[in-house]
Amino acid sequence: MKLYLALAAISGFLAVAIGAFGAHGIQDQRAKELIDIGVKYQMFHTLAVLLIAWLAQREGVWASPLWLAGIVLFSGSLYAMAFGAPRMLGMVTPIGGVFFLAGWAALLIAVLRR
Image (cartoon, rainbow, N blue to C red; front, side, top):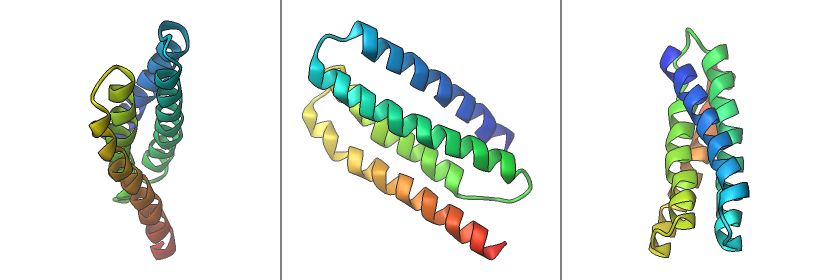
């Protein structure tokens, strides 16, 4: 779980840094909106990864890796499009959303099995 705690710390740092850059360094309104959405989802799931890693130091919980994949695919694709990547990359965004949902389902299963 130490790895997940470290990844959550990195992800939290990046969410704040990207959010600040989006708020102060981007002029395009659509790009700002995409960054805002990505940062919100990233931070919510970063906190979830942090909580699960902290709670499940002895148990293998699949929620954290699923949420981390969601952060990379969902928030990452939004960030890439905000910085000029082709809009076609938006096809990846829902896949990240599915990883977020799968992480929440994995958490529910782990809790019910406890």
